[in-house]
Length: 444
Ligand code: SAH
Ligand code: SF4
Ligand code: F3S
Image (cartoon, protein in one colour):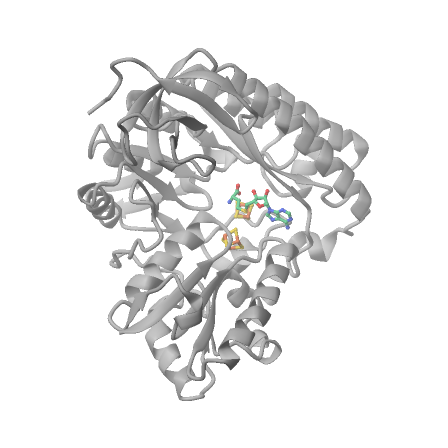
């Protein structure tokens, strides 16, 4: 068998897609972790910010050097950057042999064949139907504890700054039966956690002969598979996270009490320019609903600093909403203009880079203190941890996550990857909870 090396950048959906690609190619290729001996290298890319793309350009130059020493090796580009830049990339990047956009992975065997013959090989056609729902992913890089399941593709929201609706195409939901069979397969393989993935999971909808399956219905179906299978999801759009979903989360202890609810900005004026379709007040109303229905739920977010026209007052509103919500974690970015988006064609990118940097630093500094405060609240508590592996710092320590998605480090004892362990938290940093096993703690 020939050897395939896949490198994945970007979001969790790309991780799930790479597993689909490995499966599509599994008749001809087996996976390797050694790029130097691979016959085919595939890079699954992200276009969400310019620096993500620059990284890929640098990486392609490095791989080009490896390829020169290995005649016959092929290099292909997948994912959002493939979709955004299309065949232009084949001209600009001499190392590249083939290009496949996110909806074209079924054609990879044919594209590879053409590339091997020296023919032009690219397919960036987007689809309205493709969900790869009949393909059981090859989980070549998973840790055996936690797996991703794509439940939908694309995005119809067109936030004004965002490239995703262009690179991933229209929103479509996957057949729930195939989602359930994938989850059952993970369970049978010993996995303890699944994360259901989509850009906007709350708008999941699938029509069946027996009626419509909503996201809340789907979560319930997956949660019912086994009480020892943790269920997570990402990402929710604040405009349509429903009380119905929050009540389902409250009913099932195995649905993790963690919601990633990107706010992006704290002022209604900025949210309007971003086309986020909620106001500051509406967002805070959803936060109040989460606090009411799920008192022990952690809330994380995404924030963009320095978006078009951002005033000091708007920046301050972002800082104040962060404090008001008290996020347990946040992914924070400097605004990066993306060609063809509404913002790129309608608003000047007028916040100077130094000011973007300064505002981002203020946001990061505030989040550090909020993360620390959130973790400090857990000191003294006993929490259930699903062990994911050995701590990077010490062989003697294991690490895992709480239902709230917080990382916990504790002494190994008799435990191993995949165990649920009750841990009493002794101390913390902004990033980690540090604890010891509570006496007589193991859950089956
Ligand atoms: N679908 C998810 C987000 C997907 S992209 C959602 O709507 O919440 C992940 C994050 O990247 C976004 O939440 C946003 O914070 C950030 N992002 C997207 N486009 C960006 C851009 N042009 N510049 C900077 N950050 C961006
Ligand atoms: Fe981008 Fe908005 Fe869609 Fe998220 S919801 S992927 S930010 S367009
Ligand atoms: Fe990036 Fe595409 Fe995901 S742009 S964030 S890899 S959907």
